[in-house]
Image 1 (cartoon, rainbow, N blue to C red):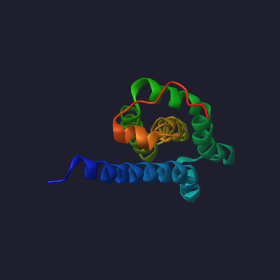
Image 2: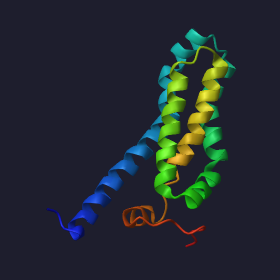
Image 3: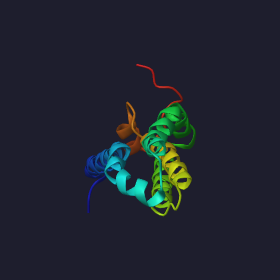
Length: 143
């Protein structure tokens, strides 16, 4: 049987791995779409302008809702917000994968950007410490 003192460091490593993989997913999704864009443009009949919006929709939604994602994490708790963000990100990815029109793809990419903010809200100055201790962050981190 593992003692509680040994369980906390092991839990921190799992939290670190999960948060790191999520950050990789968020950053990678912002750029990897460029690989699939030529075939998506051909299959969905996108113009060059619409093709650029596929990339921009994600970045714009991510940037626009970044502060709100942190506030949601403060209000609901980081763990709940993180799980919600991952679920929404998966749903947005699925919608993007089954998109039949350019508009559907743009909406899905925007949804992915918002969901990425919610999932990334877990990462903060003391996120690992607070998450391992089961605590919530204060409303505002300064310093």
